[in-house]
Length: 490
Image (cartoon, rainbow, N blue to C red; front, top):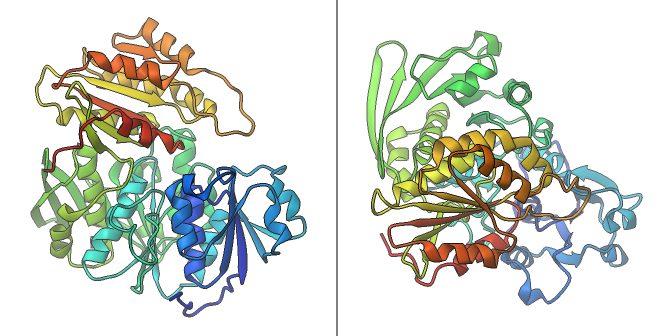
């Protein structure tokens, strides 16, 4: 049953219409509103044909009572909601906005803030940073759930654990406990509309904004939070001190944050595939070494686990119980998912990586899976927009030159265009040609996915194939289509 809010000083609307409800962030908030008893409808440009052919997110929304419409303004002929919820991607000439003239409008981030305010007796936990937000949000929510805390989760990806329950859509999970775990998006700076009770700050790297601008944004976002678990370099970037060799530091607010020193620090002391040793320090003399299993490949996965433990520590919960749950993490769809084996015997992976740091981490994790040192990686990357590709092209080149092996191949697909205004420059072929001319590694461009498929004919059972890119659901299907055999169970 939908939940009623407690200590509610903020009234949620009786009805709300979400424009672009198929977006992973938008659908999560729509589900949260429906859980609260709000009459929710939504539209999306993907809703234009048979319901059977729609992505699974729409089926999940329908199951919890969300009424779906094509994005043509037709919803307004049947209902007049109190509120229209939009994201930064929705343009003013959108047919739904034209049809909704005179109806109050709210940005998705402010709609999320209203949901949090309606649950002000709970502690809201924001997970932010350039890379790793979605996985860490799901991992923290899973950890708290397995510890018996039953949190609410509002995420930016499909959790494999939380997608089959009555009020679980993969990116939303209902909960009766005292915590709400949510992913805070920095891409349009809309996270500044939210004031969390606790925050995980993962890292600061080049993506939607330069690092100095991101540091200022995250400084402002975390300044009001009561406790903060921050990656050390990110903590320093926003003006906080931490200890030498620490990877994460936990800060608890005193009278002002400028007086705050770390209450504890965490360090990834050792890492090897599948296991890690974490060092926890409290004060000058108290040190503990904690052993735990890591269920996903890649050093970045161990760092995500470390972030989860640091936040559990910041919340004052039982760290030993959290360590027992870490290996049970089921992961998130499109985050290094092994889809099977290609006809050549090469393992095939699907990943959401779309910026230099995420692509580097993905490639390093895939390399761990190679059955022999002589094996190579064939990476197929679809940039998620022209502006992002232009913004990151230099950083991406340097990341690839450092990360790719001498026999690896990095294949660009055409830039994904989702509609709206765009510069249509640079093209992926131009970037691939530039990288090839000045780099020492191997780059290629494939005009179509069929051409990319032909490139894979040269792989062997010692190799690995990874499909990377964001914002395009069909990439997961493409990765699955490359595999003729299901992955072997571990």
